[in-house]
Image 1 (cartoon, rainbow, N blue to C red):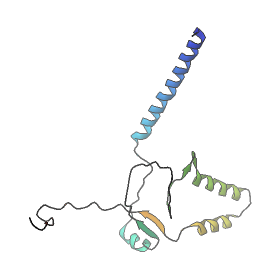
Image 2: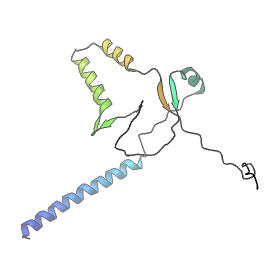
Image 3: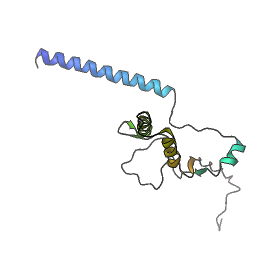
Length: 146
């Protein structure tokens, strides 16, 4: 190996290490703030009764912090964020709508009507499952023959 190749190898290794170190530092800074993707807003009881017809509470059978999969088949999907290949599709759609309004392609009233027509009849809302209550041994059902 010539000295030029060794010099290039060392230089590339230093640059690679710098990128890796900065990624670790940035990741640590973001993880210190905690997860930002699950936000649950509390609602008061009177408002809950009034808005109960607008929401459909969904209690999932399986929950996990994160999941990776190749294929997802679903009848209905509700999401606050939607990213595909590094692009936030909801922000892209909002930006496209704003461009159409600014370019006078559609009027503001038409855009608002489009948004109102896009709203679902019932909004899916995450309702966590209630934890199972522990059963005392003396209250547990007994098997026959014991």
